[in-house]
Amino acid sequence: MVFCGHETSVNRNVKIVLAVSVFFGAATGIYEFVLPYYLKERGLSFESMARIFAAAAAGMLVLRVLMGRLADVWGRKLFYGLSLGGSALALGLTPLSASVFGQSVLKTLREATFLTRETLHPIVLYEERPDRFREFLGKTRGIEFLCQGGGTLIAGALFVVIGTRGNLWLGAALVAVGFILFASLFRDRPLPSHHRSRPGRLRDLFSFDMHRNLKVIMVSFFIFNIGFTTSHCFIMPLFFSEKFGVSAYAVSWVMVLHRITIGLPLLVAGTLPIRNLKVVYIGTLTLEGIIISASALVPNFLAAAAVWLLHDLVGAGIWIPVQNQIIQDHTSPEQRALQVGKILAYSGVGAIIGPWLAGWLLANLSERMSMSAPFFVSGLLMVVAAAVLLLLRLTPAGPTCAAAGDGVESGTDNRREQRL
Image (cartoon, rainbow, N blue to C red):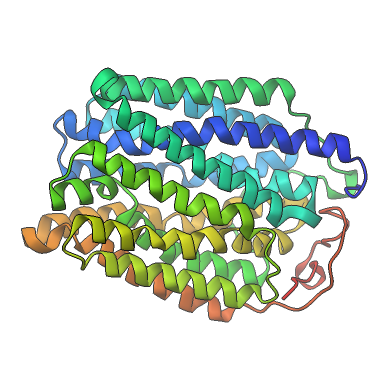
């Protein structure tokens, strides 16, 4: 495959993925902000919310691995498109249920489709232009997060007008537009025969047969996901409204800024001349954890929000493209979606524990401590996750302009080497 040429077709797919990111991002901003308030409006307790989020994290694990395997065999477009269509369906049905079981099923569907897209999005970009992968990933993710902020702002402004149900249906409509756009305009590109995945044994789907660096990232990301979902779950908007007694509209502005502070650095992170990916990855993740823990100790709403909003600006907004670059460079071309799916699925087990941990802390600590505890514990776990990354072994290599498959040989000892 040649990627340095064929600029028109390559740019077409990248632009379509970018356009889809706009609609999907806005819908995600609406959904993630509104859902906790909808569940609270339906009379569900913090413990019930924790069960819903934990059940969703558990329900999508096997599906994520299977989707990755099938995407290697049947192509990227089908499953990327299904992820958009399934997400629109889940959002559209969410306002029709008020039970723990019903919400668990719908949340599981939404997370399964959402995370299928999370698996395939960087793969599509890497296979289109591996030489500009971090740049394209940073820009598409950055714009997506900015649009999430816009979606949150819209939801906050329309909260009184259309309520939680109307907002969720608006989010479903936005994802549906993205699905139609992608299904009609994106052109799937078949892999060469020597990189095409072949059906294998069932047990191979769940093996740990992958590069050592991928295993290190998987363990680190497992711990990170426990910490991340301890604070970035149902408790995230409720932390500010319940602890400080501010309105949902005031919290919506914090959530908007939350998206902006990750979106802006992502726009430029992919073009930064980073020469030591390992140091940047560890340093920014550590700093992110320290900031989140510190925000839990601040007693004033504006000050706490200001501190907390720094965590993505100097953290995830920088390390996300770095992490994805390392992952893509160490996966086998014929099993790229499967291996990425495994990493995200196995590490995603942590996302089962995080919401449960947040619910346990809220239920078992004193009222004064309970609202702050999930944020404080969240940051500590992120620091632990960063420490695991000290085990990464990255070797230097010069820049390339090669196909994802031609520049990355399969097998443990023949991977395309990572630039330091």
